[in-house]
Length: 506
Length: 113
Image (cartoon, rainbow over the protein chains, first blue to last red):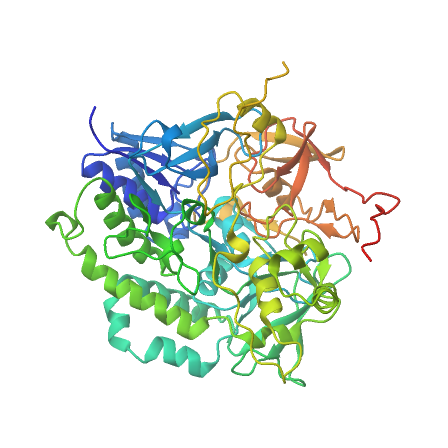
């Protein structure tokens, strides 16, 4: 078969849409996802044996998901590989067997974190990265207590397990995502004590109301938002703006939180603190794109660290495309339309093709939506004002703010790498996914107000992870005999495998 | 005052009732339904913390719920470092909470000065 081989990584809205469009354009498609079900975080759902007859009530666009899933599952030119963890990506080279391959992906397929996963190497003609994003939670005193969750965790547990993370829950952070989380929680039987939004009324107004015609334009999205707002008003959940959870209290689990008013820079205003009793708090201040594969393939990133794409969703690397949240936090409508364009062009089409219909026009609207989210809810630098010297910054290694400051003073270095090695912040098993960007912010923050602002060095920062996810040494050892060896590119860290595989001991 | 499963008879999603399964956490029996994750079963049973951290021996459980933070790591049937929030539970799974202590004597590094 001469069809172009397109690999799509990630089976959330963008990846599903990309896979469907690529197959429709005649490509042979391999769709990979680390989870054991399709849908990504957005359409995280009950497992087959517990599927709900009325699961649609838990989701927006559930029908779209079901249609995409059905189309892909019955398409003979689409291979869906679930539980497929891409753990390394190398730029194309001689050893892939084809100079024309977009990249070479090393994949482990099987039960999560399992010891016996099957190794798979893929060297497709085109690659679509649709790896999505995860919650970004800023540290605050007490955030390591059990009962503190990311908002995404509350959502995943509500949709995928039918569990409410608490009975009296505070939802806090920034962004429109807090509303569906509050909605899911109350649907799961929890009482949402309050939604605490850091955005100030003026930034919210600037973001959401300055261009009301766009709100009409992004019809789906605004309908979704207004749906949540009405749901909240009906349920009488207090929605409080310009405030943040600045501390969680409790012995070995959360019993209350302190909230405080914030100024425009998100610095807590002394004297405005109040306590709210709760048994769970769900906190998200936005999203961090999952950039490991984009960085490994050498794709250019923007200053605010998203993957740069052209109107056809091409990255700066030949035959590598990106769609969805890794190109900007734009929500499900943006992801679907970007995926559609990326898949179509990856399969050999042109983004101006009639087959894409209104996709290009739709994307303009969804891109505008992404800008408005940032304007209304984007993280402001004053948040570091709610940290204390003993606040844990890196959850894995339990590194405190004081330790980071001490290392900066003692080493006279604000280098991320140096700080990581001297304090262990970001060196733990999550590979700095949770703390990386916060540590970068702290390093870029002047120690006293007389210092000029420090500009963080451009580049991938804490998001560079040559080993994309922790892999067991035994699995690597078992791979030694079958690893494809590639000349390491000069710009990225080489593969862990030696150039000549060592003899196997067994 | 803990995580609570949705009462199936009042769940608007009407999930199907899958088979009952039993796992153990540090010897304690936890009953749940097939299809739940290990973390899901423990949370639904009101267990909110299991791992202890190395430095402060502080309790941890689920934080991100989607496999990103690794706070929920457990040993399952002898296999260490499995993310409880992602691993589907199987009847009879033996789950052990992890507490990886730091070495009793700090590692001595040569004085750099």
